[in-house]
Length: 403
Image (cartoon, rainbow, N blue to C red):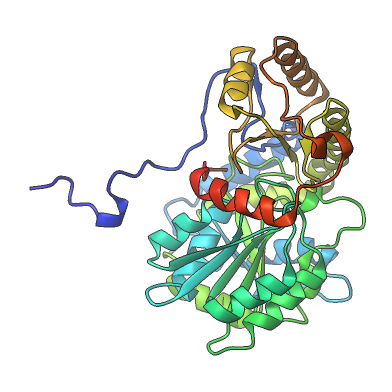
């Protein structure tokens, strides 16, 4: 008799988890390197202490006050539209938000679709909800070929399309016309498909790059998700949220667990939102640090994906694991993820950036971190798109490390 009596498709799988190692410089999970201020900490502590006095009672299961505060925050990115509390939902991290979306709109006989390389938890959400998973392919610069994407959507007719923007692990942002085109494609069949734009890193987008929140009033099948883990420096808070048409929110409420957001989580999130200007004040500094590091890596001869996130995908290496290990041996932890040959580094403080640069230079001087030097890398010309797509087809399935 086999033990434990696990679902067959889960047998032999390892649980999700990036390395959590005790090293001087941790640049592997895209955390905000700047913690909350003493004033913010004091406000959170006071709010949690107040909430603790009523822990004998269940929390507000509709968390109306928190939804109202989140709606006001999102409305700043809504252009001429407005986000109302009835359009907002929240859960324990954007992971639970995504899982609830697939619980409500995926399931047996339904399909979820994304475009690789993409966030490697997406197929796990599909697996856990018994939703069929389909991955299309991005172009060599990690953008979307809209014609090919449209054809794939029309052919597969997915119930849910998952689009991280900025994309993880590449940092690539989707233009609004791409989101609008996929919303239209997903609305062309019955039942209509949902387009979920995952803006976990949305606050880090470059100047002039719009949020998909602006499009909510135009597409009833559009969902935009966010998190307080990144720009809000709240990775330990575990608060993710989304905005969508109220009828979609009501559908998600059917599958949520009772009282899924604790009173303490609600209190802490509300306190953090009161300090939004302060917490988001470091975003500009991190953008500048990111752009400076992108320029530096390119000067060093590395290929670097354009980034609208708080991380950078760079390469390409013949043996990326050896480079990852070499950096770790020098006290710098980054991420071995994405297509083969690439590595991802989170944007840290100036001191952390310097430590990363020094470690990479030391490796390179020893001949252990030289990028693949083809005529394309040297001249700036790209490989033929079909060659890069073939490489991605090979790499993405083989390299779905958790991001």
